[in-house]
Image (tube, rainbow, N blue to C red):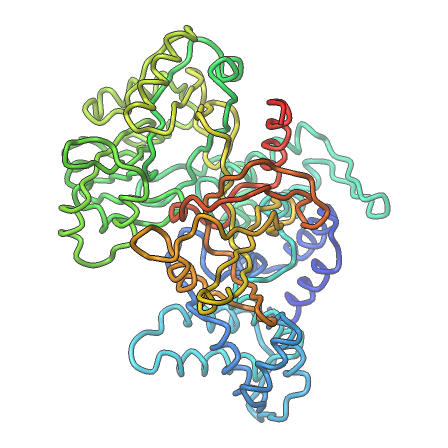
Length: 579
């Protein structure tokens, strides 16, 4: 398939903000894509060349792209840098310089989806001497053969900033529209921007696609199954130890009374630990640990692996890894975050930062998926599997007993409690109300840094003001909610410093104008605030009043940050409390 067909779809998607029309555009295209190309195409429309669980990274910064553009166009690096500072978007710069390129090659040819995909994947595996030059050559090869529009989207894909506004819901629904239009009795009125469907059937097929995705974490694979095996194939998708799965998420309740109202009585009440969430997979002798970001951290926790080896059977269990001090007391998350980042000298890290597993759920055991098994029965299975590793829990209908347990949890150094529906199923990737969390503080925001400004005076060599955003799930775009500078330290020994933040963000810069930069949305930070206000200044429609940096959230992917819908809920909740 020619790459220009895909870039034509990008342009159509970019030309509308209407979610239903985007779904129609993508589904119509998906019907025409050969089975052999579906997985590539569905990754590329997300602006990526690896599924979310794949740890390989392209490792391409803006300056490398500029070198490749210079090689492909015959222009000077400095001229491209000048255009970048003027235009801001390196994709649009690529479109401009390639349309005017002075170098033409007799060997240039029309690009295929396969060629673009494979060249970009190769960027991730280049290592050793001459890495930069080899990456430049590989990218320049594509840009030399590219049209101006193709160059624009190649660069945006490389920088992981496609800007076509596809959220997870649109990606899911496009599969339903493409492969099951008759079954759902789909009729789309483009002029009125509305659909007419058999709602019961639509929900059935949409849920089947979503459930398959939550297990496989790859829309490309899901699309192939939908096309070739239909709904029966989607419903056959099963868990299997050894592959990352999305974890179930929990909403915040205002207090214990609210928690009981939402999950029912009696309920299971557990400590809410301030640790690192990990899905532990065991299949035979093979043990793998995955974070909620779908990243494998098995090597970083050999002590946990040894503990898990003692357990019998094949399973996937949901757990929180907690740091311990020399007296066995719980340590906050920041203390064990060192373990996740470390790739070398693991034995010393195990000694310096001991940890403990607290297991609170199970998804799979000895060939059987437990996703639809009631929570109280899943807990019974855990008592047999790992009785010494269980998260502390009580079952009660009493608000008084729950309050006592809540205070006990806080005094132990935890964040609060979890309150869970005894009949609740396990729904990967969802906040569906089968359990809620109760914490003593206003819900913080996990925000993604999308921009920054260079400081002044003694901070002039650091990025010192950070533009933060939340995720609009309808469009898949990050929408801004304010700027954060307070809470970050000048000295490294006092906490997360401006230098550390600058070092993290420098390679992610993709636009530069005067003292402002835009960065790839990769870094998630937890932010406290005094109040959420409505604000026309930001695309979200909201602004955080007096935001303050709390910590880096290395356990969060960008797309796992707070959503705009959640922010709206926080806003209404605070008003209910009289703010």
